[in-house]
Length: 125
Image 1 (cartoon, helix red, strand yellow):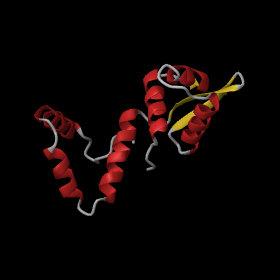
Image 2 (tube, rainbow, N blue to C red):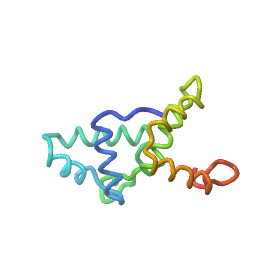
Image 3 (cartoon, one colour):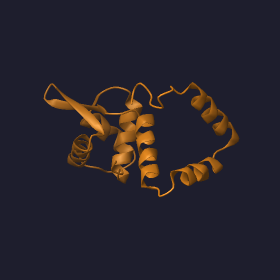
């Protein structure tokens, strides 16, 4: 799994927040609230995100509309899996992660583990 660059992460956050397919122009308008940025820059970054598999797109009236290929949660789970895969000791890495969790997060994790399918894989993986 490739890491997201700074502008890529900002754009992905926006696209996840929209909850619907969006054209480059919409993303550009929202980005321009906080920074000066060119249309071509946003278009290039969104095209790169599409090529990397983070976005899907569909041509609508001569312009692409983009949407996330995965939910934010699916993306973060994939990032966590990559971190674990790169670890020389998965169990130790998980334990260190758990030590950093708040007690209420540990309770939610335990509840999620109790509801986990027997195969260990969710049906939407």
